Length: 297
Image 1 (cartoon, rainbow, N blue to C red):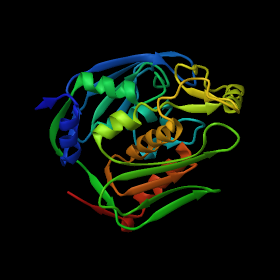
Image 2 (cartoon, helix red, strand yellow):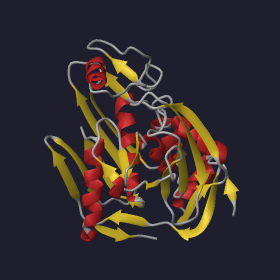
Image 3 (cartoon, rainbow, N blue to C red):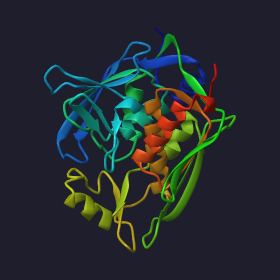
Image 4 (cartoon, one colour):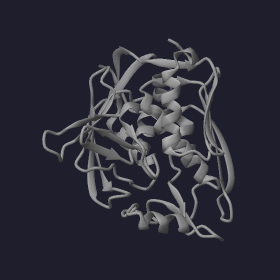
């Protein structure tokens, strides 16, 4: 099975290819869960073709598996949560975005806790772990789906849309009044170099008010200024990597959540003030209506 490290040229070839890919070798990543605050280790393992991305809770009796699929997504606050039977994993969106951005279709993800580590709050450490492992082409063909008819899913003034497009593009808008975030828009055409350099380093973000509210709800027990960017009403409390880092991070969330469909998308996806739950609801409705989709090779 030919292998290669995910440098820009090889990743471009992998994304353009109609073949599935997996990791070339195992790699481990350790850190703290954002919401639980618990120490956790994640082992990314190669997986056979056509098995998709699967989480395995190695800390639980029987080591139950949880397929990273829309069918297993359940509503949750401030993260993406998967459940299969009694087993759960959450805060998996940054890892999922990294696997999708690096064109890794099949992966066994072993976790010794209920949550993926938050690391620095971005997808970049996951990209670096995948680069360490390398990726390998497999014989099976990738499932590739293009949007043929538009779809928009609303929740108040928030929405997610998908429209036909000759290239895969993601556009996001956010609007946070009375703080430095403000209104931000960004549009990104799918590509490994741009994802690694311009999108993946963007960290999760919050206002001080949001952070206090989340703590009161028993969330973000493992949050810190080393794993997120936080602002008060006047200024950011940590230096930014990009002037529009928050909206770049929302593109990571969108990519990770849409990847739970288990397909390679073609289309233009536009989201505004959306949540993980709305991302997932959009993808579920899109896949449920075959008239809006066409297969491509």
